Image 1 (spheres, rainbow, N blue to C red):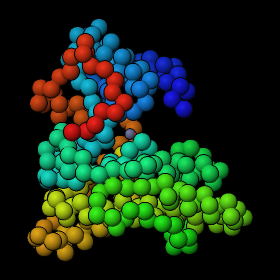
Image 2 (tube, rainbow, N blue to C red):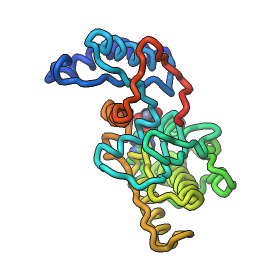
Image 3 (spheres, helix red, strand yellow):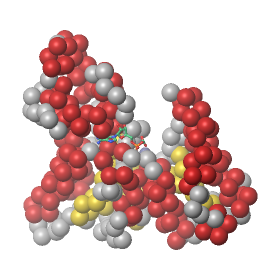
Image 4 (cartoon, protein in one colour):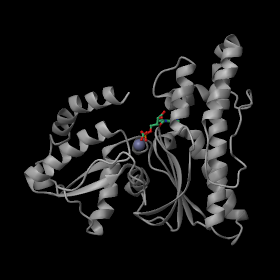
Length: 301
Ligand code: KG4
Ligand code: ZN
């Protein structure tokens, strides 16, 4: 609900800034100020962006506008100095599911994305229809730990299509129909439903990412975004990537590196915005605060 989200932003932005500056002197300890300018909900973006621009203006700091999806990918550099390029980046969040070819940090080529729901959105919607809490991802993955992922046969939409696009609404609909048909079974077998649903989403994500690595002969893969906190996705993708390293198409000895941010840097956080800004500062790509505007559809390129 965009209006509710925006109001919460207005209410929280100043206390958050106050809290984060408690131990710091903004005049001496802060070199630059960065903020997300897109993509996302316009009203929420505006609150954050205008607050950050105001700070930059008042304290005379250089400003960097950051793309939210690029920031998710940049979060891996909080723990790793180097990533072998080209890399395939998979960003899976509540609003996006996309594969990128990363030829240089800060330079991305979109190769495919979801045609309907994002992966995280599917987790959230399935949780809601099963009467579980929001956000659905952590709740479903917790239940799935005790479930059998083969108990229910949910579809893997578009998995074998010859493109890098995704579709998750079909999996959600399949859970919905199953639930409507047999509520009692779904309620008693909630752990199995959670595990089987999660596995369907993970299988499609892993399969397509592996295909992208093979097609673009990538040397590494970066998994990022809120859904990257999912342990089954982390494990399955890592295993699949290790397998390519041994059986790789062009070079059987090639080792493909697997990168994923630490858990607390997967879901939205301020550190990843700073990480993305760091690379822009290195390239001296500053943003004019008089010109920048929130862009809800800012594409990552
Ligand atoms: O990146 P993020 O924090 O916000 C957006 O940019 O959208 O991602 C939030 C999404 C939510 O849909 C949430 O359900 C999902 O990430 N998520 C997970 C897990 N933790 C968070 N999905 C699956 N498994 C998890 N463990
Ligand atoms: Zn995000």
